[in-house]
Image 1 (cartoon, rainbow, N blue to C red):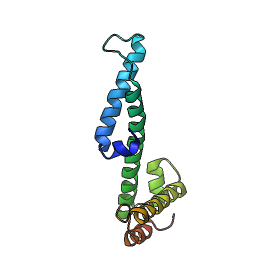
Image 2: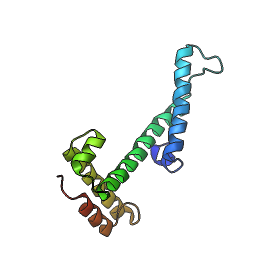
Image 3: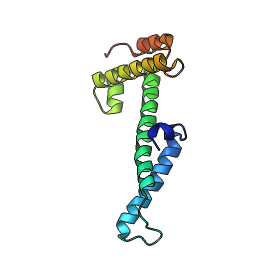
Image 4: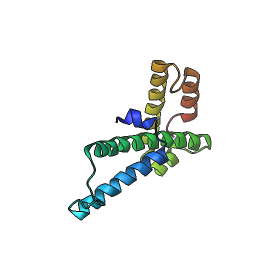
Length: 132
């Protein structure tokens, strides 16, 4: 399955749980050395599922990250504070958020319903402001 297919089937929590289950089984099999029923290595489909799930987790965490950046800006946080909370510079945090806004705008242009409509894009840019 592709990440796109799995993304619609999982929340961040369920994707993480399934990924952890597969990762743990894979680690136990590697430690056991030989399959014994409980330590059987992952099958090819399971290995590919784990790989696709890792991408789903990254995507969903990224969506949540931008939502938290928006919340922080709405609460009055500066880009310096946001950058510090993300472990990066204010400029890098601001630029990542600008890319997210552009991606959301492009997604809406392509689908007509996903992403951010033009009015929402303007609101996001106004909220984001310039790096302080």
